[in-house]
Length: 252
Image (cartoon, rainbow, N blue to C red; front, top):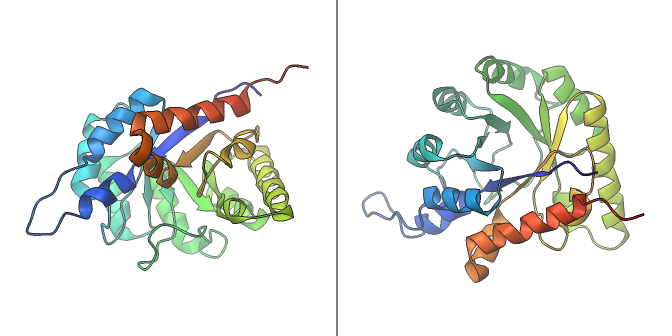
């Protein structure tokens, strides 16, 4: 298990901090998400994740345009399965688009997309993104029926929701870890590249990073929070080191 596990860095909450001082009639451009993109690239991140939400609560349209034009890292656009977001994705053509559920009352995306129950709505969106050369990912719960749905939809990537694992305690931790490992293996067996993310921290990331089929972890809120205390570059480098250690070959 020596192949590099990619780190996708979600920089949404840099914009959340900026927007605490922003209103429609008074400016505010600090901290700048583009500057964050430059720092995390230098610190060892492999990609940027940006979630352009319906209510623009953190990342805004102009952020996406500026970062897409300037960043050296591939961009993964998290997006709701709506006509508006599809049009934006087709305009900017990011490297990847991850379809996520979106409920206005959530501060962050708390559950997986029901790909199994929304096939007819998702199918044309997945098809149009794919035809535009955008790599489609589905953010789903680690369940066999959701993997099967991703296969029917022709999505090349799934991102397994790690929230239940992150919130588990006691014996439930091992149960949730096994479920994630099994679903990563099932996805890979069916030719789907598995990623994972949500609620990952320094304390819980390594068992996830050690799942051999996983190709990428997407982490944001925790790293941005740690950056308040240690700086963004140091926070990214610490997560990168933990992930690399989990993938290092163990001496026999």
